[in-house]
Length: 457
Image (cartoon, rainbow, N blue to C red; front, side):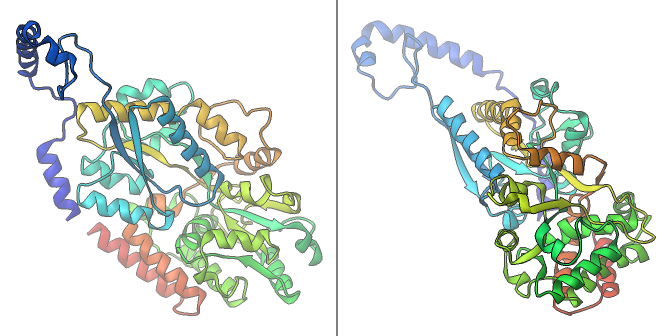
């Protein structure tokens, strides 16, 4: 059905900004008629009535409602910043109403795909780059915004914009730079098992897991009910440690396969950790926020999640000093750079194509207001990494500076930003199965590759 929408949209062209050449003459004629009636019907016009205009040309400001779908429902600090920004826009633009459709992040992409297939996107949408953006662009569902780019030319480098650019057309503006693979760890618990700092090799990492388990401490808190954590926060970086950063693009081109030994080794890490009892037993029944809570409440020694989570773990936590941050360690024989962090520019704000002239103008006004230097600075103040070239405010958290240093040594690709959704779904289901002893890494690798082959064919 989605491909049919693409074909139909391409036939229609969805060319924006076309104007009826006859509209000008119609309006001139209307002015003439109103002028003739003004003298005779002045009292009627003065009484108000239900007309869209009057002889003097003064109109009451029209209220324009824009529908916006976003995934900002969790208690993450950046989500609160975004929603406050929307409220500020409505306060300063009283004639534009933003009707929000907040969708939990785990369901957001599925709903976005469903609405796209029905050619029924919201007027403003939050989109992801790469594999998630491609079908939306192919279906002519998003409005190019090249003519607005002067608004961000001085603060957004090309690297921040490229993920939302297809064939020279810009389709969205990112709000943050996220790193999905940050390991938050309880320094006191690590000291209990003889580690004053985070291990720099996989063998030492496994040693920590074994010793924590023996001490009665849950090594890693995991909330995988939504399925994305093991895929995005784990396999993105564990895979990169074994395969190197060229692997996923090579898979897309058919020059590498998920059944290659290096990727199978990455899957084997999840299998090994599961068999060691590294995760909490209710991992697949807890969501990602509950997984964070386990660490914060002292129920586990480690939690692997995004850089944004630092606001909860350390920045806004009175006991934040007891937690450290680290990256996944090096692996023996790995082709990847152990200093890299898996990162992605996120939450691109995009405008639906085909809006009428007034809605389009209102949506563009919102985009220019919502994403600007003020937003980026506010995110930084709250400990969120941004893709923009802005000065770090004096009151920015020292934890943010530590995060920037940790993640500033190269970026590895995030799995679901490169690989098609159909393939990601197979991987996520299989990873969840591995945690409960179903299947093997080799079998899962074969299933994922088959999904990739089916997508390509």
